[in-house]
Length: 590
Image (tube, rainbow, N blue to C red; front, side, top):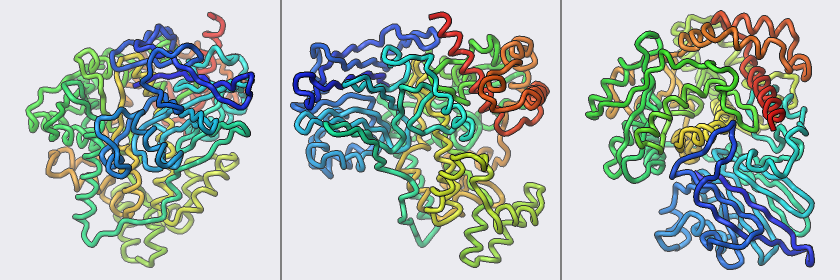
């Protein structure tokens, strides 16, 4: 992966001309990210500043491109644009841009954030991928625009103490699902997923070029087997295009459908090898999943790589153990779990890491499908779904009918109805024809909340995290197919279970319950509670931001400590609290 920093300046004597010069540094410097040194041969730091050019790799005549670019449909693009094989990703994008202008980004499938400077027309484009896997931030200083793949690289260009307090309220209202132009810092801006920013001599403007809700076409086959075959074909491609040549690939393997499917598809790839790295527990048996994945390892003649976490607990040095990013992240609180596994993967030489993240959001589905059945007057199927689901979940069929069929409100289930975000997402969902699609749209949006921490984990461990289930082609395909293929009353992820039956084991495909790590979390809390409570007992989110009352916070902490279910916004509030306190400490030290 690349971290990059690019400065775009208007030349003073002409004012209208945009200039950019480049300096490339191949090794990542000793950059600070909570006192962490980024170290790996697969992580590069690229500077593009107004210094002398040392490397022509990113310059193509009057065009300049720099960024973090992974393209997953190269063969298709080479054929469509009649281009030569063997080009770098940067060269490929530039050739496309020469033929089609900025509209060429509609054809890109991949994960990318990059900047193109076009001196011919005095334009600069800063582009982020459709799903938002790669972040992109920018600041403006007089006649200079500075773009970067991470906020911490911009520290010399803004005041870290000039906080945008409205951001924290929005972060709270959105339950940590942030894909908006603002950031925690007043002077730093974000480019949202599926957007690009255009800078020319007249203006700077943000434009959206892709949104899942704009897709109106549907995929309709005559037989279910055709859906299964096409789904597996696309998922297989999503996995294979994220593998690299050699013995450098691993999967974070659990006993669930998602990671085991990715592992099995990767194992069938004859060109690139794949290893597995799994968390195991000898003491906390209820957290251990070996009974599910060891049979699969035997099937593929793989010994596996195990990381015992019985005594590698979370919150050991709270909050110092939680990686600091320059934006709060709910997933950072529990990131130690992934960091411990990724570290072992890197130590064994497997720095290209695949995970099953995104499978839950993409494929789980829900009983909202019954609303679609009602609309199409599929009454028999509607009642069959309601009855079976209520029996399996031991819930009220009458209440399920009210909540999911007669008065469904997807937004209300996830977002506080007094927030502006509620109104925004409600308007967005009105554009979508079915409730199955509405729910999928929201779930994919929510997946973005967990992506920002990946780059931090990568920096700490020297790995590159990849998520095949967030492949644009796969998401678009699932969005277009009938909702019944995602959800049935008996179990979720129907299309994944059915399409993977031949390459997984019955132990996995017939599994209904998901393993949780509640016992692991509770053990971690119990051991480290005295230190935890000292840090968060008197919260800024109460005294400064007013997001929750003192009594409500105290009650939530008690439930969390005792392993009880807490309020739905607890983790979001905790993420804000930890982040602000860590930032304050960082500012004091500096």
